[in-house]
Image (cartoon, rainbow, N blue to C red; front, top):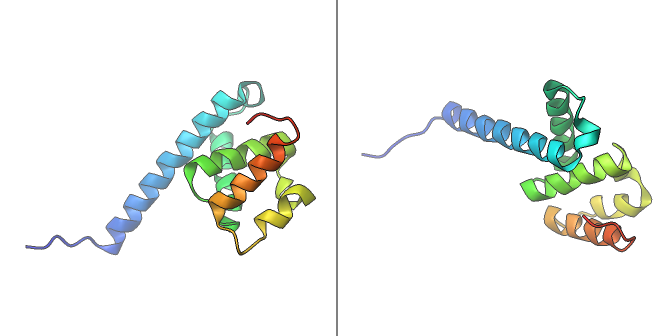
Length: 116
C-alpha cells in the first residue's frame, strides 16, 4: 500500500523546516554579533532574519550557509548592501546561481582584508 501525503501536509512540513531554519539563523546572528543583538528582542530578531531570508531569496540565495553570509553582509554593510556597487552586479547576474553569487561576494569582501 502506497503512502499518500497531501499538499497540506507538505506545506506544513515545509513551514516547520523554514521556522527551524529561521531560529537557527537567529541563534547564529546572536553568536556572530553578540553586541549588536544582545538587547534585541527575540521577536524582532526573528523578523529581521525573515527579512534577510526573503531578500536573499529574491537573488536566488537560499542555502542556509549562504543565508548566514548574507546576514553577515546585512549587519556589516547595512540592510541595503545588495544595492551597493560591489554587490549589486553579482546579485543581479542571472547567469550565476546563489552559491556562486555568495562565493564571489565573499571573495570580494575578503580581498579587502575582512575575514568572514
